Length: 61
Image 1 (cartoon, rainbow, N blue to C red):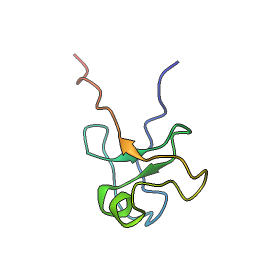
Image 2: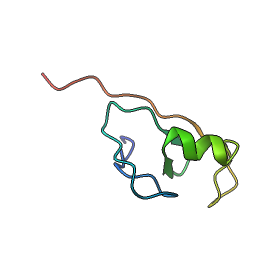
Image 3: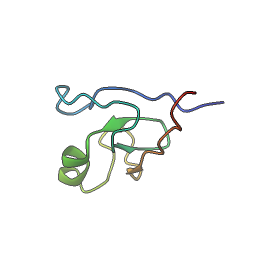
Image 4: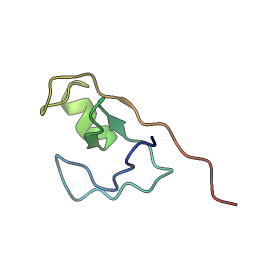
């Protein structure tokens, strides 16, 4: 099962997050841009879980 790679920050909703852009996610795949993740002290406001660096996918060939 692959991660759902969301393209919007759930907090500010204006940040576009391409698949290769840095972002923060929790274990439920809630997604935040880096500035919002930092502002949230790397704690997901939805589940209280840890926000970690989202893995990046290799470019399609």
